[in-house]
Length: 137
Length: 137
DNA sequence: ATAAACCTTGGAGTTAACTCCAAGGTCAAT
DNA sequence: ATTGACCTTGGAGTTAACTCCAAGGTTTAT
Ligand SMILES: [Zn+2]
Ligand SMILES: [Zn+2]
Ligand SMILES: [Zn+2]
Ligand SMILES: [Zn+2]
Image (cartoon, rainbow over all chains, first blue to last red):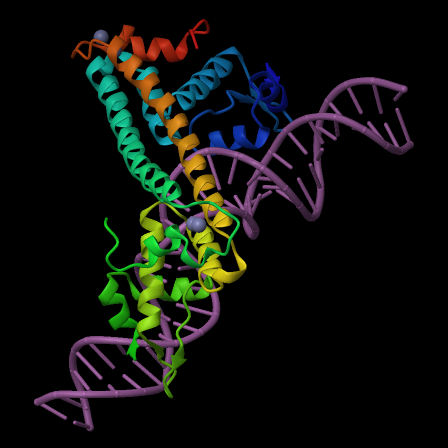
């Protein structure tokens, strides 16, 4: 049994983060000391590790809540559901990437057309492209 | 001269958004009617159009503030500065894409390893990959 | 005994870009 | 004269995941 600071240090998160996770229902201390200190055991470490890993692959805390409730009751969930969650998140990320890629291309195009010189920006093609009504979209 | 609702409708934004832009110093009404109504002219349309275009290529409102202050005083800025802003934003977007791509690959890998069947998730490879201490990173 | 390091709670602040609301004033038409 | 559409302000709420703070209680070491 160890206290919040020790768990935090062990997995390199802040104690504030751990209290936040508890508040979000992700990771509750299994016990409290007589003075009210949170006490954790090895299972808590595993659970926190799971949370951290899930974050590393792109799940948000809401996703992770779902994953955790599946994890503690695997019999009552199917591979199908877990995979669906994973693919759904992947698709969301793909959509976000697609949007950002459009931005990236637009900005690259704009930058390529600008001379980047030190003369006044009077005729800067970036500015005129953003101004002009007939800007090709 | 027209009022906020007409400008909003013309460029398909909400009046709340326009008031927000004013509060952020992006677009101020050139005049107020005797009763306090915001009044805009053609220049305001151009300016709002500029803001919208800049958003469409990925600039945020803070970037756009900078672009606008360059735009209204082009003599005192160089192409170099405008291009730098553009490239800087592009690089930021590239970094974000890179992070998301890592997520995307991780999730795809996880999904590929899971059978996705309707049997219980007892041995689901996605869950075990997130649990196992020796998970290859 | 006392200082340092740790813990508690509740609540506010952060970022971005809005969005919504309440309470009230204005304007055009019927 | 009264409806309805429009406008004003100020302020709160939204999302995500923390982060920071204050005021106080606990533990450990010297
Ligand atoms: Zn140039
Ligand atoms: Zn230029
Ligand atoms: Zn399976
Ligand atoms: Zn599976």
